[in-house]
Image (cartoon, rainbow, N blue to C red):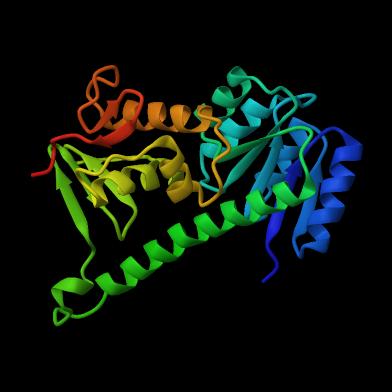
Length: 249
């Protein structure tokens, strides 16, 4: 089935260029030139595999559009920003974007990021469906076939169902936040540099932009830690990286 992309960009030249390239790559691309049209298209019942979103839009800002999308959907959102500033990147990612690319960008890089984001979202969805299917099997299933859960102090991480609970309450993590947490709970005691985290979670080469890791780590800690300023689950080793704290049961 052809994968559908919603391109939200007010610059017609950029829109036409992206539309043409992604169409040749086999995607079905719909364009919205302002925030109101973008919301109308997204809420209109169409299913999209990815949203490409410019932050600077007429009528309704890109961050407003992103908040509306995230209020009811986990579709991958790739921010396109003309401002190469930490403020724009942090703002977009902080509201739940999955990745960003700074203008001007190459079509090859954009296509690679689109493909990677859709692939990661597909892994998450297929994992959840597989777990649901295994749960419907009879009582004769082996222990190895049951969902894998890791219990931390006050935190329960279900690796098959892609869910996390804290003190019995389910936490709403983004796909990136879950995969970062999964990385640490799957290898307790191992120290990960930012480059290694990026390589494992984004499945792309690391170009030294630490802001992506910083923003996602901050957002994850705000959700799982009692005191994000003094984290217990994921510890920072200054100048080196991060590791799981002493929280395994």
